[in-house]
Image (cartoon, rainbow, N blue to C red; front, top):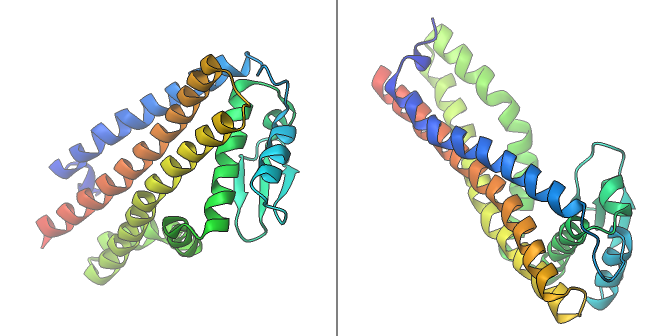
Length: 228
């Protein structure tokens, strides 16, 4: 009934799935490790964010505490750095790294960093259309309408492009974060190394997401070609 799962192209997903599991485990372990270590500056996430915002003259950027369970992110539409309650209040090295990374995104936005602008343009489109990808594919497979399958594949192409563009955006934000913390004397050398580990672990999840998106696209494209 669902031949996609018996087609050899499904094997393409295995490396991506393994990397995704590894990345999730890695980021959980590293974040928890450095959540237990306070930064020597004694800054909470909120205080660190406000300091970095002032240093970078981002007067129109605000810091907000989100509801429990919401992720940490920079909202370019409202120019707000939103922090989860634990990151907002914690003085840990993990919080310091997360906050500096989000400020890095705010600096990207202020400077007109092109990959970020591209990602921000694609985000609403891919976010909405990705929910329709599997329904189109299923309908196309069940009804043998190749046009629906093609639409589903095009959606996966858009998602893959979005995830690939995300990689330089995230890595650049992490580099900016480390530079900001070091240049402004907010971390000791051993703290710099710890925060680098935090940011590298987080970056690995984006690599896994990009690999999964590309693997999905290759798998579905190969499956479609094999059926026609």
